[in-house]
Length: 260
Image (cartoon, rainbow, N blue to C red; front, side):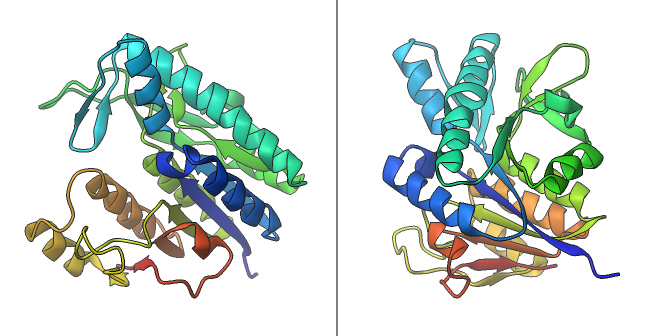
């Protein structure tokens, strides 16, 4: 039997921080027919709040070090202000949405990232996604909106990379759906030259990915993003794209497609 299609879209902090861009994206997202899930980050907003509160933000290889103080900020920002703002805007666009952390409905279980070379603090690595619970929301035509907060089942919340959450959700849902995963950010895709916004690399497979890493084209925050893309493809996600917000309404827009 042919699987039903499912779109998993993830939006990043630069779109979230731009009210006009966010409103435009959500309006386009709300018009998409069929099952869909939205995952959002918000690191930029969390950093701005931390700065206002004079709390230090530390990043290593594009990933946030999450102290106890920073975890409070992450939960307040991601699960509170950003998540509920997005849900209310989707409701305005007649898209019935439900805002979730990983703790809600026990949908995303995680464990503290083990200390190897770096102690990331209260950062969680996903160990299980409750696809049955997510499917229950989709079956009643409700759009789950996930923020980047997970839990360990023992009362501890974690900051978890939003790209990873999108990849893990897409992978878990691929058993029941034909899943397309779309990473939406402010650029048109992965760029050959960061100074040239039109230098989009339109297709990246594993061989090309390793070449780009060796040549230092892919660095910092793009490294974990692309790793998540390939993790999803290896776990039977059907399609993975990296693009800007225009892709959500026009798939012919220049963008990056990933394949194995």
